[in-house]
Length: 632
Image (cartoon, rainbow, N blue to C red; front, side, top):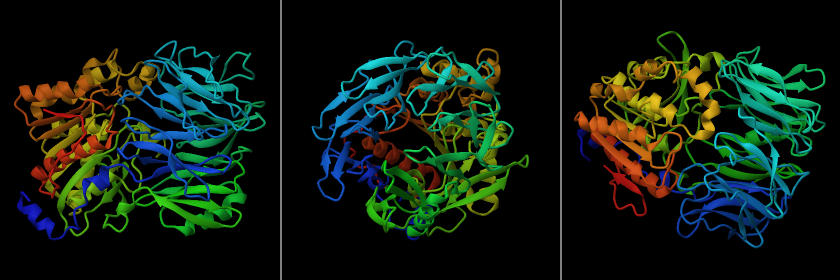
């Protein structure tokens, strides 16, 4: 070990967990039951360590590989209602222009359903009553907007279905598989709910939400008389509402005064709403249908951790349940509702089982202006406090951190660092007052919340104030750059992953299909057309002279959201100013690192970087084959 701090830690920390376990591919993950209950599909690596889709017959051990992705690995897939067919999504080296690939599980034949160069496919809907069709959004005619297409799953024919006038960002089909509702972005940065009685009729605006509100269609009832919407008008938090399409009256289905709904469970045939989730410190379910109350009570007691129903058969006799813990892998079980029995399938990473992982604790503190800030604290096992710490900042920023196992968190804790993850103002899930408190506060009050969190750690005697680093991806990368420029005295080092350095060039280079969302950026971040100086004042690029501490940047060359230039421009500025900078560019990645070789390479560099400036322990970089990283 390179420092006295590290030598002291080594005697107290649990054994070092190899990065391969933390950042390598899962052994098996994302299992899904076929709608007819005959098969189980899952994702697992092949002999070349590339993630593929595998399938087994229920009740047998005839597991076999279905796909043959060459390099990037498959991470997203789903069953269709057409017998023996799956669909997976894949892009090219992180460009996010996803294609839909259909796989026949009997013949292993793969067909590209959307073979259009430079076009992004978005799945809109599947329906068990229309098993040979899928509704897909494609920006085929205009790169900025997605029209609706109906694809025949028997012969691959692509048929134009619904025109996008230019501002529609979401489509909703009814139980007859017709597009009858849509969500738009409006000039004020708000949104409209559109509805039409039939596909022959014109769209009408049912409701407008202002720029400080949130709302949109969720799904139709089976009889088509009710449209369920998720919205926070007339309330602080997003509620689930039932809109009577005849009377236009709204009825509250589920709500919480502080927390937004975070998902719902509906019956696969009847579309009846059975339960609604609210993510507070942890996930809490509100049961709406008594027929599943006993099931939920049974599942709650069957295994530790948060559970989610990740798959279910059409007959609804069998569920596939995932249990999430903070100190271990995801555990997958099948659940027989009739017999009330649960059967263990597998965990996604068995090598984590039995390791001494660190528990994640929900915390809260008061920001300097009195606003309550929630987050999660993970303390390294066996290390006395105060200890070196890493402020790990989530992306979005219109997202949130949640409780549970996170590879980054456990990696940092295992190396001897306290980890603080903060849901700063502007994070979602806590109601619109909290979300709107982040408007126009990039690099300002949003950043103050992070600094207040660091001060809280120090005041509580948890962190050593001279050994706190800041790290994050996307917005978390921006926060890292802001930390080293706007508050250079606070942090000992920073690790930025695909973070924007200049808010002006960030907005100028967004992907074309984000064009309708620009008005949201203008309202919540700053107006590119009228407020260039304001945006410049919140852009770390223009404050490079303030940087005192070392910075490590990781970037994907094909990132469509935060372009490579966001990293290279601040790297160049730092090099020109003689500031300490390390930069790694991954030539086959986008907004993050999908390939395990690249994850292992970057986190090896980051681990040694953090050990140098915080004094933790590290696993030597070693020889990592197959990565695309170019170190500068």
